[in-house]
Length: 358
Figure (cartoon, rainbow, N blue to C red):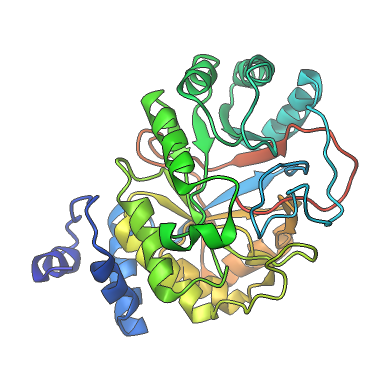
């Protein structure tokens, strides 16, 4: 980052959005002394957000299994023995009932997820009907359905879909160590189809997969150099699930996780940076450092896919201790994610633990 950029930050002047970050620039940010890195991240954060506000999203349900992919971290993959079963698509009325519950609980955006590699063309009209009905309730809609064709993305947009969630997971040079059944370009192509259809994006990745610090920088470079920064950037901390290949992986150093949050905030200053999977196992002190580093979005309640979240009471107690408050003002959807989000699975299944990263 240049001296001019530092001067702009110190003066409280927003720095221009960039999509041309080099790996060496990002590695240099990761290498900063922690006090300096947190200062820079906090300075960028307050240029665009109230640093005392955190977006609080509600999850009513989670994803389910039966996915043919081989993502090494994910218990939804049908090839791993994790107790997650393949199930069928829910009926529209059952989805609507969950949407009504979410709206009654204060949610303004409703996310529907299915553990598919990609939806079959016959599935799209069924999901489109769900989207139209949820929109009729006066809620924004979000979906995570796997890879999409351009035609499928347009059909979902025409049905009223607002946001599409599709993560990049990790650095391209490490990607093949984690996933063999699809290439990183498949994910980038889906994001291109989604943007071309006029949908907003939620897109992030996972750290603690065994990647190096260089590869962590590569993930953030990939996200920051997309043609448009994601509206929401979930940073997932690997939750190890027995039965998956990554169970037993050495955990990421907590300070390295904080550094990842801080660098994400600097690179993508207008995006919501979300503490996603793995938060349940974080201490209050670690979460506080993440908020200081620029995280301003969390999930709470029930489960995040197959992994738990801290309960509402613990979160509100932490907010009180830190002087934080849930984000109340609905920021411009052209530039930011929305508070009050409910995520629900649209695959019907019996009750059991479920999926992983969002």
